[in-house]
Image (tube, rainbow, N blue to C red; front, side, top):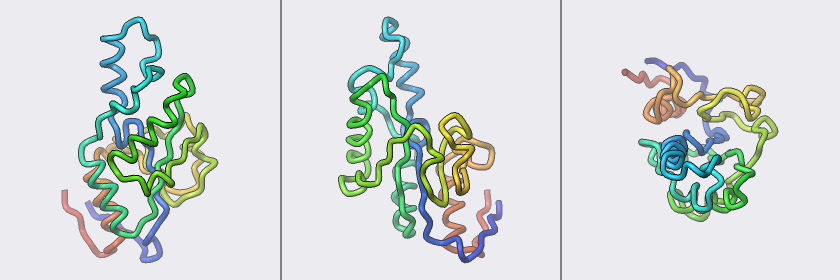
Length: 166
């Protein structure tokens, strides 16, 4: 696949969703439904967000995007049924990316309220993604099925003449 990018597209603000984009929310949600059937909302369980496993290649890809000079922000919706969600998501970011980047954690129900060049999210609507001012990169889509393809896209920003071959 060849990505054609203008030179002016370098060093961008990239917002990255957490649940099912960098961490495997659905797997733990399904697990908890099976093992805690009395809990209608597994995400409301204290400790739920701390137990999420990273999505394949997500951690290294995000760190690579940082190394290219892009400004990374984590833009995630809250689970208002779990008051611990806010602190647990912050602790998850610290565990995998370090304390310093925790300043770049944004928890917002409506993602269109945040300004940036890119939003990487597994949904195209429902939390304001469809009204985000910037380019929505739909994680899990045909064009961006995984973090390898997202990394290839941003590598093309760094080197516009780069041809990425699938």
